[in-house]
Amino acid sequence: MVSLLAAIAYYILKTAIIAEQGPHSKLAVALGKDLKGKISPVLYVAGILSTFFYPWIAIGLYAFVALMWLVPDRRIESMVDQ
Image (cartoon, rainbow, N blue to C red; front, side, top):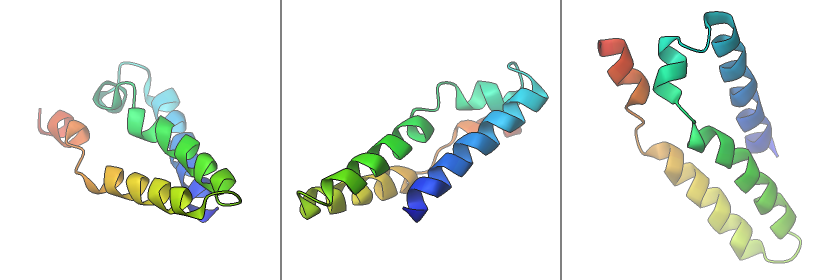
């Protein structure tokens, strides 16, 4: 549950920053569609719901999201360097 709320907070923060800076800001361009940011809350909800029926699937989903975010995302760094 805490991870889901953190993912939602990330989405709100990202949206607020892009709204303040504009849709053509460096952050907006660097994030693009932000697939990782959008799919994480969905996978967390799926993990929470699957806990009641298949706990191993829930553990797998949580581990997948953690590994997905462990892989460095170079989009923001490349935009800052330019």
